[in-house]
Image (cartoon, rainbow, N blue to C red; front, side, top):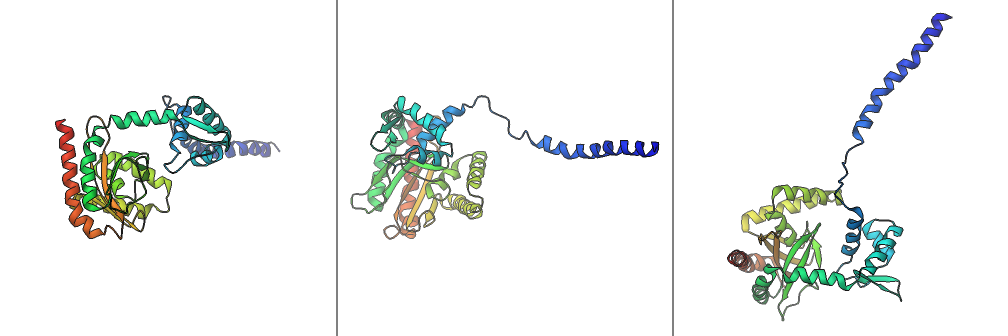
Length: 287
């Protein structure tokens, strides 16, 4: 009886000791992300609300914004109320929805007015647009997209319905790939990881397209997208570093495929586009 009690007393101790190693990996893996105490989450969410408005959006409701920002509707309601009070959103009583307010226009206008590259590039871009009968656009990166900050069209051209403020994908467009080609490798890797995280299933094809664009840039000095972003759209692009603490920018020339075929863009437009970008860079450095 005594021996049996001693054995029974030892059994729980063995079970307990076996359970301890199983718990330690779990506890070791839990603190993966260290919080950034300098990051203001409320501010980031407010800016995310403003950035979810796209060029074609006239009005968005709290439900629309909630879906785009992936935040609870109750949180969005507080954010839109605050942004309306500050003038960054305007509430439309008839629909109960919002449009961007005048305060956002002030921010964008101030930024564009001080963008020297835009002012220098515009007459050269218009000249190329007239030659190519396409649309010539200057863009900067915004998250995983390129946003147009200048746009020129030929008067006789049938071109794309995009304008200043329009956003196009970073990964599948000529402009986005040109941007990726001129930035530092560390930044490019970080952006590619973010693109991969957005759509893991599509990533192999996306990565192949980006790598093809990087090779094109090394070989011919520009990136091409012939029906890859939209099946009936062709474009080429060259990127550059404007200096003055500004991030890289890119200029594209493109339009409907029936109007701008791949051969014309690569043989006739590409040399002019490359030369134009060099002239812009030289003007920025000398200026």
